[in-house]
Amino acid sequence: MREVVDPGRPVTLVAESEIVPSIIDENGLLHAGALFTMCDCVAGFCGGLGALPDGWVVTTNLMIRSEPVVVTAPLQLVSTVLRRGRNAVVTEVRARDALDQVVAHGTLTSAVLTPSEGVPHWERPAHLDMHAPHDGPHFDTWLGITVDGSDVVLELVDDLRNPWGIMHGGVTSALVDAAAKHATRLARSDAGRRVRTNDVALHFLAPAKVGPVYASGRVLGVRPDGTIVEVEVRDRGADNRLVAFAIATVGNVRRS
Image 1 (cartoon, rainbow, N blue to C red):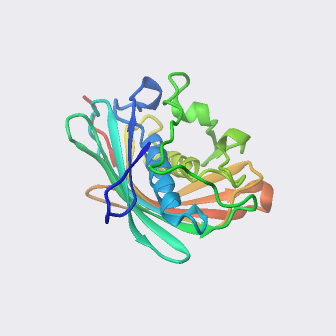
Image 2 (image 1 turned 45 degrees about the vertical axis):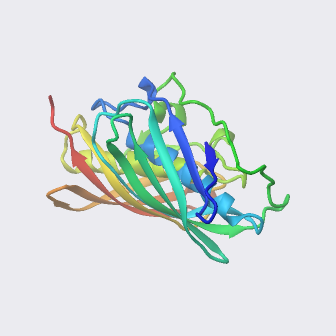
């Protein structure tokens, strides 16, 4: 990720990602949970830069639409600060591929906080080299997402925590994606149904600190663009505290 400096313009970040097999889903499309995670990372870092020098940020809301297109690498993500308030920063994120196809578009709202160890310092324009997408186990397997009846669950290991010590917002979005798809398949009594999460409105309500973290989906209805699923995410190790709530649209993917 690199900051693009344009005098008089808001903070803007540009990032590029490889496309490796581990982040491709069973439909041959970019895994929605992995895409949501990328968007959260880029837009969150952009919001953090926008919050300086007053504080750093944690995600409070993520609203994103992804398109079910076959992506040609590399994937480029561009995030810009839309609004910088005293207590919150709103950022936009857009993802396009090498063919200039729109892959995702969304907004992220972050709360401005002061870390106990102090506000981080970044040389500007900022530059951050993140780990390339792992070319190993599939994304859900790497996260440790498993199925427990009607729920999906993951253990909250250190690799899944952000600098605040809580579950990373991108991991939460991936868990919501998994729960929404699982609920859709259960409702249709078809465990092999080919589906994909096309959009999500995700609200972070409380930090997940202990784990295991469970996500349960409930189908609300069906409309032409897909199945509407309500998802609750709870920290089972913290008195089953509700940590996130989302509404997702899960679309069917036609078999070739």
